[in-house]
Length: 458
Image 1 (spheres, rainbow, N blue to C red):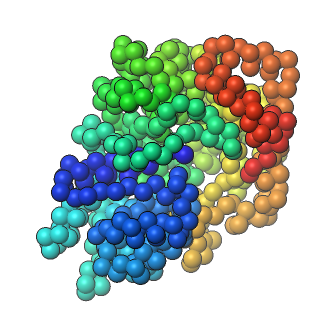
Image 2 (cartoon, rainbow, N blue to C red):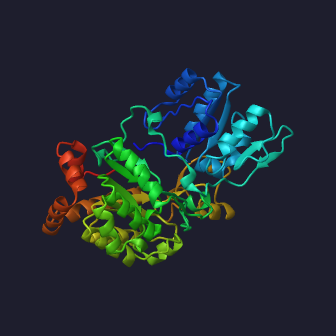
Image 3 (cartoon, rainbow, N blue to C red):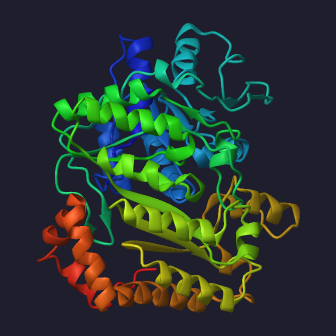
């Protein structure tokens, strides 16, 4: 239940560039709309232009929604964006003629420019990130668009979302209890993990907002009553000097928020994490992925299990709640290596854990490799695929799902000990978010199920 920051940023850019336009944002995901409910909402709004974001996981339902909307309003322009649209632009436009235009990458400059050109009857050749058909059947296909100066963007106007109650949940267990939102302090990723499309979407360009700009938004949010916030950056701790300056400004301006972020194990020194904890960063997430150096090399992860172990230990010493995530099922990975990863996670005893069966997604180096080898079928670009679909001989769906269940069970078992109890009592004393999560879920049946070993969602 996180706000759609991307749509909010685009709305802000439109409001600045085209103040005469009337803009509505519909968070169909968090409203839990069905296709027909979303189409009904579109019919109520009757927009001249309908823009929609889609991921690989939501692509087919997005196409069904837009097809029905087009049948109702054939003159309405339909513009698509997001990760999946960026990496499958021509395929989408060939197969779904009701899609008028696709903007690849970041649309804050491109969408206002596209609307101006359409409105004035001008050519579209100079619109950043645009893929579209010409009337003669040829293509306009510009490189994807990136925003380099993130400080130039207005803060997202969260009032456009109405009174939706947002929050952070994990398998039915709420992790936040007060007014909640998200914030993006940087974009892109300089790394090239083979299972991830973030590097391709950003051309491996990591761009960041200044500490002053970030804390200015936090100060505004605090004045608006927000008290809990997830930083959605893939690489928040990439520039440690910037993180330290953000922490200094948060403390200086007396912003009392509970903050959640993702960190990289190689940028997790104890002095840095202590400064972060003092500024309100109560929860940190590390993508550990595997205990096997061979598998980490296959993923081009550029980290070691030892670094992850040190990062988790440092975060615990700093008084933070630590979440680690793992991927199982790499085509080269043995079942022994998968079980070793579960043992590794058990030995770290993080406060939260996430296990994922490897996804093979359009836009990732893994997908490109499979496509080059002829493994990918003609229609496979439309949907998400898990590794067992292409490599069942390595590990079947049932085997991988069983291993995930074992991983969650092993995680819970680590806390059912004297050492686990002592650590739990310590973190309750030093971490207010830990106290909120524990005491806020005392009567939650999903939490009780997890504690008794019932956490079995794959």
